[in-house]
Amino acid sequence: MLDGEEGDSDEAMNDYANRPWLTSYSPKLAPTIDEVPFSSLGELVDATCSRFATKPAYSNLGAVLSFADVKRLSDQFAAYLVGDLGLAKGDRIVLQMPNLLQYPIAVYGALKAGLVVVNANPLYTAHEMKKVFVDSGAVAIVVLENFADKLASVVAETSIRHVILTEVGDLLPGLKRVVTNFVVKRVRHMVPAHDLPGGSAVSVTRWRDALASGARLGGVRRATASTTAGGPGVRLPAVGLEDTALLQYTGGTTGGTKAAIITHHNLLANQAQMLAPMKLRLHEGEETVIAALPLYHIFSLTVNALAFFAYGSHNVLITNPRDTDDLVKTLAKTKPSVLILVSSLAGALMENPGFRALDHSGVKLAVAGGMAVRSATAQQWREVTGGDMLEGYGLTEASPVVSVNPTWETPRVGTIGLPLPSTDIEIRDEEGAVVPLGEPGELCVRGPQVMSGYWNQPEPSAAVLRDGWLLTGDVATMAPDGFLTIVDRKKDMVVVSGFNVYPSEVEEVAMLHPKVKDAGVIGVDDDRSGETIVLFVVPSDPSLTEGELRAYLKGELAGYKRPTRILFRDELPKSNVGKVLRRELRDLLDDDTKDDDTK
Image (spheres, rainbow, N blue to C red):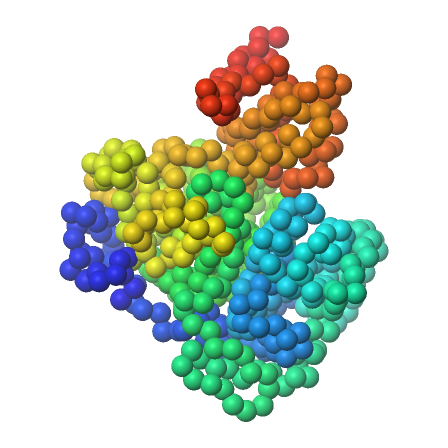
């Protein structure tokens, strides 16, 4: 069994005194998951593609890939990476693109090749991209050409040697591919001019040429951790459960940019844990799932590209969920049974008359990830669709899902539900002692989904991983029946439309402006995005204007990290050791708001 702790027995997992959430489990939900029957994610992909070969696996922009297509194309890409580029097991490869058919092919191919995937948000600025590329030591990247200009400006300062450029329509059929790529580049002018390659040391290959090269190499030969592979084709390295699959960048529970080391075992376990309660309401090989969160976000990667994929579901990839009119058309055409989205997108959809007019009777599950669901949003969703929105909890360091509301009964709005099977939870005080039920404390997690540490960060790793437990930094309570509720943040992370924003990063960037003396950042509630950023600034030069500062931040920070409000102050409240007191910043904001209301 994949138990929450080494040496656990079935009897231990049924110790209701230590695991009160088990009393709330459905009788059909086992307290633990079975050991996964695969030694790597590549084996899971191949087995799934064999089982559901003729069924649709992914669709996007009107094109469909069957499971057999996914196997063929990911094998070709793996063959190219190993046989043509000569990449070795453990090399890091960056994937930077929105939800397109190319993404699952690239991630599966890279994992089959024994590479470590580094997901990069396409919204990153060149400055942010460079930080991730340099820290990870990536040697290759698959990037949508729309963002190649930013890559070109920094690639010479990184270890990247191979660039695979893809265009939006590269996996669309024939004429549709040509027309789509022409419109994106020549009509909508969405591909800025770039000068890749950035130097003689960098090779540049087109996506379709890479696949063609992999096909010419004759496919792949597979080896397992205990066997070698013979025969024709490119020999892939043996990949095992404890090999690293992802370096997933996050601010972490301790703040500051760092990469969680996520193994094949972590992801195989978490997709099985997440599927266990979903199977109580869904049917294998029959579901159509809307993937409205980007697959480079670890929630969507685990839930859509692994769990629902392994369940034989048809994942409908949404490239631009902000275009709600187009999304509504996709919903009407595909008639999904499962929606994976963030609550801010749910709010936008409910404001769309077309969405309200749809027949929602076929939707079995709506799962909100990436950010908290407001009670008002959950209530409105029920009124509009007649169904429930399931909220859960996760963090990158747990691959990422930790808990979810029940699928077998009405969810408890305002809670993050019950721990997943094979997941242990403790709520601890500042001294590390477990607090009584109902009392707040730090949420601590133990289970097979917990990361092995942060990449090249031994001290932060030791700070959050203790005796097999992950200290999340979030303050929670546990009810007598095991339901969990997040009540506060031990740290100051802000969640904007499902993306983590760490105040210290925004403050650091702001203070690099020559006219900024000091900066402080807080998050405030927002009906659309969950939270937004407010930046307090102490100018060192009185000529500094808000417009000047905004223009600077636009070049340094991704859009979701930029402040919606900038407030100038003569000084910021600080502790006796010089730390900005964010609680007092909130008081300043409240006073500022009151002043505005009285004008």
